[in-house]
Length: 378
Image (cartoon, rainbow, N blue to C red; front, side, top):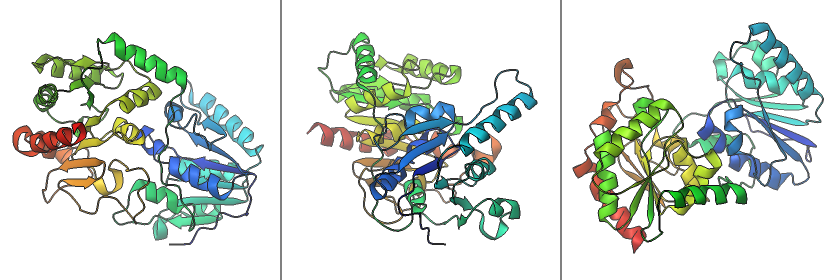
């Protein structure tokens, strides 16, 4: 791997580019803080998808959040291309000395090139890389494989030196107040500690069974706590949560689909535990230093497990390939099967993951949930 030198010593402007989803963008936060620590007078901006903007707005080391042009409903292709051209022209007018594309996609490399930054860094595909992509970069960095967490992959692009390893997500006072008001309206009286349960994902192959989630919520109540359900705003997620609520025998709270991303962060900060699936809200909860108990299926824990803020080791906080793993304050449960993690969207193209659906509540989840709640309530 080429050693990255983010020169010049004091870049006027640093542009960070990530064309991925919500959780991916949030895990870029330590790279932002690391670059600001090394270059305190530099102006740092991020170029991301519009839906991901709440993951970075309010970050203390970030001056601006910009978004890619996205297709509008019914928009003709030529109009989207025209808007993209105007965006590149605006980008080229900026004073960027350093542009870092954090993924391997064409979109990020094109934006780095049109920024006209003197130093243009990007992850590339090594020997299989296309010549036109290499032409647009000054410092192509072959993706470093192995069992390494995405936070560490991002920090690789800053090169050697001092690092900040905290994932920061900062709700405003107004966002926090709004979230707490919504929580109070559910009937929570603060007599029972909250356990956030997030059972859904936009990717159905990451979900556990509805019965298992309902049993977990009932057990939370039996342990003297109260389950607070959250989910995304999509109709499929809301439908799945309604099915889970119908199976619950004990009282629980429901804020599913009613929170913005920053409000969700504020609510996670009020919980003593996040219990749920491998999805962006898991990373949001971990960013609030809320202990996470996550159920993983086909995804690798070593690269996507909940990040323990301030962790100072090498490569990944999760050294095993599969099974139950702990990196305090977080715990991950995953089947110890030879096919796990496969990295696929479910078994054999079915969009369903046996390694999750066959995860047994009584023998594989309950003992760990009991241990977590006893420890956190002690």
